Length: 548
Ligand SMILES: [Zn+2]
Ligand SMILES: [Zn+2]
Image (cartoon, rainbow, N blue to C red; front, side, top):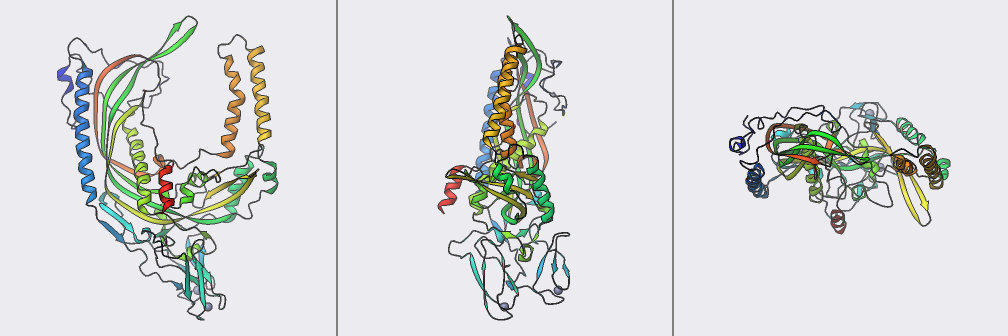
């Protein structure tokens, strides 16, 4: 197999390793580390001839140099990048948008089928798709962006004033929360459809397809399962009557990339226990390999929030991570923006630019690449420690989007502090996540009772069991599990797994380095093939955006 790496034939230099280079990278389904019956697959290397560790070290040096050279080239390439802006508001018109059949301006979304519908004659409009964006992501090159994703100009007002074409009165639209307004005099509806550089008009919108009653049911079910430890004041005040349908702003990114990962991996050979007096210790024997993976990767519809408020998932006063957690959306069904999709809902305008979000998006794209590579390294059941991760972005495409969310919110007051709890429903998929205020005294008392039962068990029921001390953790574990279940402070969008991608042309490097004996970790030390780095926005990015 031509694996694409410049690897010398390792086996020619080392006796006794002939069988090792051809270890198949089969997809090993039985790669559980708990398997007691793992058979050694390798023979022992005769160390008296050549030290394979030294050879491997030389090869690692060479490979690192290759990767560094390539990365330098990539940086040089990306500096010559051209930006192609696709005008996405072609044909859009500000002011009155009239029904072609009857001339009414009362046009709203029919949630049942995603089409706009005239309120008078019931005429339905076929949704329009944005044209001119690249559909085949593997052909994407350079930088492509929708005109709705353009930089926000500081001097453009959020408030827009139109002259009503029926009666001549002035109508004001505050684009911070709404994209249409009714003329006070003649009752016509005026909409903002043309893009102006204030972040309010996106390229695409994904219309609501979940009705208010359905969202109410989702929220009631979610909260209903979390009543026992819920704050009594919250329980008394809870109602879903005033939930809001909100279009939040996002950036949707497609990427055409080439990924190159390089490091070391370990394959479990044997797991065994050794007695030390009356204690038993578990040990592991493993084979260490030099591992490289290189592949083309297209990423479709990676979605990030584009308002500071939602990016700040570590905010101490709001549970914004809840809104992050209900992603992903079926972005592929989004349509050309038209303000009438927003009629009857609230919208929140974008306040960040592409350059602000690029570092986060690149970190997330690398997470997706690392996660994709996991498909090809299942042989390394003790994990892989990537030392170099290079991602060459051949092309990227950015669109600004409004995506639909049903939102319940509840302000919990604790002394002079307060916390805004959300329960959010993805208004396309019905995925629901939330934070429910906890009645702490009750949770603490119940946890203490469980702790006490654990103590009694330990002292009187199981005094001779080796594991009796575990009983002391019962109350603490119960507390942590319940807290997590009500607050969901760690909930997030698992974009590294859920974002659509296509991995092709995989080249693999797998070179045996040495056998390792009596390791005491069940996982390879330093293994990072499951790590995720883009799940929270760095504080420095938030500070930078805020200063603008
Ligand atoms: Zn009509
Ligand atoms: Zn008017």
